[in-house]
Length: 165
Image (tube, rainbow, N blue to C red; front, top):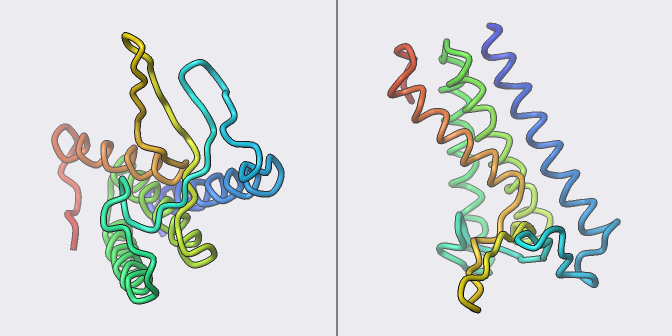
């Protein structure tokens, strides 16, 4: 295993552990189910949202068939990303893929354990007496977005890397 691939695997494992630990803490220690919303700052709250869909709540469905289909698609994506990561030779691309894989597996564990993804972070701002909310998300989502952004940066600015299979 090359040093970049080891770094990518480490990024995936750290992402997965941080994501699952945050969700377990919120659900079982803070008991967010009974204490939400928790105001952390004037613009950030901890809330609880169960997302049976995919990113940003798209394609929400709670039927068993839809959940199985989403799990199969997610598993195929993780396998493809792992192959890409194994072939990658740049640190940035490999760690980025690790972040995406760790986030995808973390959300996949939620879907398997709860039937939906646990989302909890809510940023909001009040302008002219009207409150504007951002999507509710979790640490896995943050890792996925950061990984995709870094991959885009690497594809434009970085050295040529092995491309997706």
